[in-house]
Structure formats: structure tokens, C-alpha cells
Length: 521
Ligand code: KIV
Ligand code: ZN
Image (cartoon, rainbow, N blue to C red; front, side, top):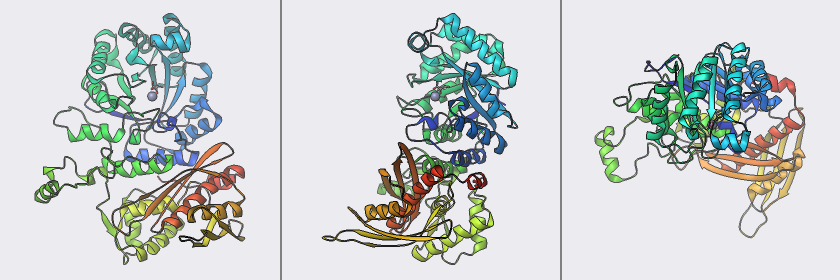
């Protein structure tokens, strides 16, 4: 992997660990595997799959990623505690390439108020943590948490001692997003000047975005010799999030005239991966988000449109295709056959088996009857809506809605259970969607509180599909569902049922289905 003399920047993705710490972003095991496979296809070097000692479920998820995702190094986080490190190794040992990431806070604020430890004790624990991790694994990363607010000389001492103890990567986190670029770059330069043997390890950066500076800080540190960036898809993470992977990667690539380093990311997978993470976490990307926002390549002002027609470089510094942006990719139409469809799906990075392909092809044909132009975003929405992470215990057979001003909105719904029986119910509500949800609740006997409901259009045009995200609460836990259709009432019903199926799977788990679920690879 890269060292400070190399011009290769290692991309360490922590979407599944720090990203998943975003409020409301938790993922189940199947979703984590989906994201891990997508990260592998994107070409990240390291996947931080989780914090194994956080819970038995987390350990299982890290273990599943370690066993099933080959290519990137699979990493697990641990505090400098014996049980954390032991659990991390338990989860990671089956990976073809693995790394244990140990951390301990070093700043005066954390020493005094959180850890109540003196400097000597911090040093001792950090060294012991790294040594224990090294007993298991040759690839060990150490992070002095809150490094950017730690006294530089003490930080240098900690880093030097953990390198002596066997750390192969030292990460310098800006845990609270307090740093500014020149100062953070100065800290990296300070460490390179004062820490013995620092040239023998990889210096990593891990920036939070509280002041909106995570990407700028990361780039500044790379210029001072750091060669690993810790980042997340869509910049999700604690509070204001982490350094955004797509932004840092595209800054390095687009300004290769300025930055003397590169990454091995397959940039065409950026947009599809961003959409997958948005759908799985329910955290949608703002329209004007750099690189992957819906408006990132839209030109509205007449003068810009005129310039673009003359030559795209007048107002465009990156081509949308480079990041896999598909809004303008007209791909298929009503007359496209199974073969063309299969090729398109494959080209978009999905690997579906024949039964899944058939299911999505049927949905595509139905969509083609309703919608003139089909873009890859439409196909993505179809795949992500039909090939779901939980078995469809209940499926919609049909439904009827009656609504209008001055009449009571009513829904009649028929669902089929996986055991073959069909059940019908009707309900009234405040509106058609409410009535529909109530009828579904009656049939499935699962009563929830709707906490969030969002509709957005998948592509441009009057006949665009609407994508619905719904979040419900059941027994104190939140569950999300999503679906797309040209009919937003239908999309709402499917999205709601997706959430209900997730709950049903939890209440009555069918291990056979949980184990047998296929994921995108
Ligand atoms: O922000 C932080 O300091 C972290 C560490 C655990 C690396 O996430
Ligand atoms: Zn962090």
C-alpha cells in the first residue's frame, strides 16, 4: 500500500462504521453487505466494516463482510481494551486481508473529562492496545482520538510510541471538526518533523465536517504527506458528517494538475454508490451537493446553457459520465428486449440471478408502458425497489383508492402472504396514503407510527417515477422502506409494505430467507 513517498492515496471508507453512527442511519446485515459489495466495486482500498464489540449484531455484520467481500482490506474498530480487540479479531480473522483499528483519546479535554487519565496512562494503554492488536494482525492502525486538539508535543510522543509498538498506519483525527486547513496541514508537518520512524508508516487523516471543512482539511493534509484519507459515501457520519468520499476523490482527480497524487477509485461508480447508500440509510443527498447531488450537473441560466452548447468545458469541470451520473443517460425504451436489458443491468454493476432479472424485467416492461424514456436512474430505482433486503412476507395483489374534496378518502387493499393466502381489508384515512397505510396495517396486524414520508422524482420529465421513502416506528425501533413507481400512491404502498416486511422479518425471523438473501456484488 501507499507510503509517504508514493503518489497513491489510500481510500479508507468508514461508511459502515462512522457513517452508520449518523442519527437514523443504522443498517441491517443485508444492507451492510450490499453497501460493502458496492464499496468493493467502487475500488476503495479499505472498508471499515464496524465496531465489533458494540453489539453481537455488529460483530456478526463485520464477520459477514470479512467472509464475503474479497479485495479490499476489511477493518474493525476497537478501543484500547482487551475485549474490544479480541472481539475485533474474532470478527475479522476470516478476511483475506484484515486490519484492526485501535483508538484512544489524547486531548486534554478528553483526558480530564471523559477518561480521567493522566498522560502516562494514555501512553501505556495506547502502547498495550497496539501490541495486543499486533499479536493478532500485521496490519494495525492507531488513532489518537481528538488529535487536532491535542498538544502537538504530546501527540508526537503518543504517535512515536505507538509506531514503536507496531502500528503500521497512524491516523490523526479531527474528531470534532475543529481544524482549519493550514493549521491541520501544519500538524501533519509537525509530526513528520518530530516523530521518529514516521516515514515507515502511513499517515492517515480523518476529518469531521462541523465547520464544513472536512474535505479541505483532508486535502491540505495530503499535501503535507498524509497518504490515507478516511471518508464516507455522501459524507454521512456523526453530527455534520465525515469527509465526503466522492468530493475528495473528484477533487484529487479533477485537479490532478495541482495535486501530485491519485486514487484508484472507479469514479463511474460514485453516483450509483451514493444512491445506494442514500436509499439504504434513508439519508437523501441535498440537490446541490457537489458531485452526486441532482443539480450537480444541471445548467439553468440561459448564458450557461448557451456556453454549454458551444463547448461543455465553458461551465463544466467534470463530465457527468465520469462520476456515473445518469440523469441524461437515455438507456432503454418500450421495444428493448431482455438481452439489452440484461446487458444494461450488468453494465450498471448489478449481478442479478435469472429469477431476480425476470422480476425486474417484468417491472421494466410495465414501466415502459407508462413512461416513454427510461434512464439508468429508473432502472436503479426498479432494482432497488424490487430486489429488497428482506423477504417479501407480504406482497400487494391490488388496491383501490377513492378520494376527492368533500369525500372521505378510502382504500381497499388485497395482499398475498408468502404462505399463499390472500387477505383484503378497507380503511378510511386523512388522505389516500393514510387510508392505504391503515388498510395494510389491518391486514398485517402490525401497527406503526409513521415518522417520516418523502417523495422525490427519480429523473426529469412529466412521466418521471416518484421515489417514496417512509420511516415508521414499531416497538421503539425505526424501520425504513422505499419504492418507486410512476404512480406515487403505488410507490407509497410498496414503500410502506417494505418497512412492514422488515418488521415482520424481525418479529418472526425466517433464518432460511435471511441467510439465503442475495446481495448486489
Ligand atoms: O472521529 C474520530 O475520532 C473517530 C475515531 C474512532 C477514528 O471516528
Ligand atoms: Zn470519526
